[in-house]
Image 1 (cartoon, rainbow, N blue to C red):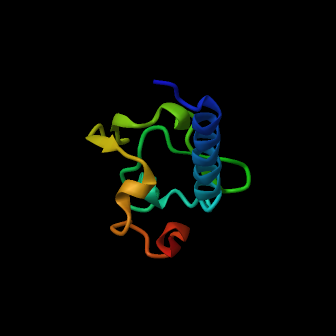
Image 2: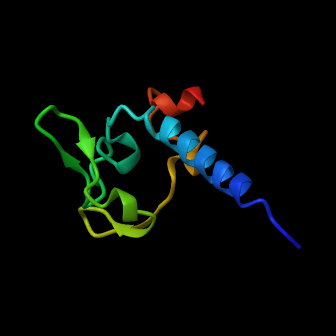
Length: 94
């Protein structure tokens, strides 16, 4: 059986582009990482412009800890919808 490798590459490229568009919606408010609940993820940082970021973002999925030491499972934002903790989040728009 022969597969069309070009089609597979095109599909993977499309997935990457869709993920990039989805990620671009983030306003870096930090709400989904606990910035406003008093016990954020230990990795949550704030830059000079007041925007939040995660220095381990590419490797964040899985078990993490909050500042107080509580364990939690970090999941992709798409898995949190529609139960996001912050109603003003850009991801509510879809």
